[in-house]
Length: 352
Image (cartoon, rainbow, N blue to C red; front, top):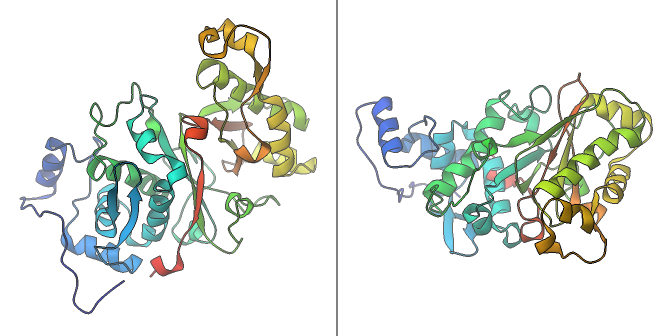
């Protein structure tokens, strides 16, 4: 909300000589992720708040365990630092609301040795309005909007939640997605239902889906046009993750590139068909777990089959990636049911 008389900002102010000095101040105090930042001047922070039609004191979310309040002011500061434009703010606010949902488990994902990141998928008209990328190099450096929206949550975690590596953030290894991990879904080049619409958001609305995720597993299959063989590549990648990392079922995401999508669409496969097939095929036996040293966890008697997905709906199918090359990716969950994917609409009241 805006008032005729701007509310005072609550954050401390610092006098520095120039942008270089501002960056040194932030680096020295551990207020950034190691990369340079845009100095969050009061005028920029207010411009971002105005773009979102928010007052600085508006509480956007509360981290459920430690009860840390995340205000619009703190989000605007992080978004400026990350390099966002003001018009990205409605998407950033939606991401924060998703992260603060109890079922997301923000504290656990932040403090765990597992080192998860926020994998963000954006749907709806806002993708094009702010120039998000859904095609070439989609998981990497192809769009300012993707890169900076994805970077903002990490800066918030550092500076509002105290998620400093080696302190609250106990990640053993981490992964590059902790810098930024944000994509737009390609909704134009196929008949599939957008992810957010599958999860209850009307097709004309913009929305974000956020998953606490491990590092992406890129896969390739350019040698078949049989849908089951193609999807077996994805299922095999999930099975490998069950053997080498997580033993718990939960949300996985598939990022399916254009070449693989064309094969599946031509054969009449919907996202529902994909989810049902992968749900049946992404399973391992107790014996397989024992063979990789996990017998102490799963026991050594019997040979039950254990699925990676509790149901087909656990699988998030995301259409994204460039037009050529038989590539896709599996995005594994952090800790399965301890944190589930959350989808939140981009609020029209947050848009300018």
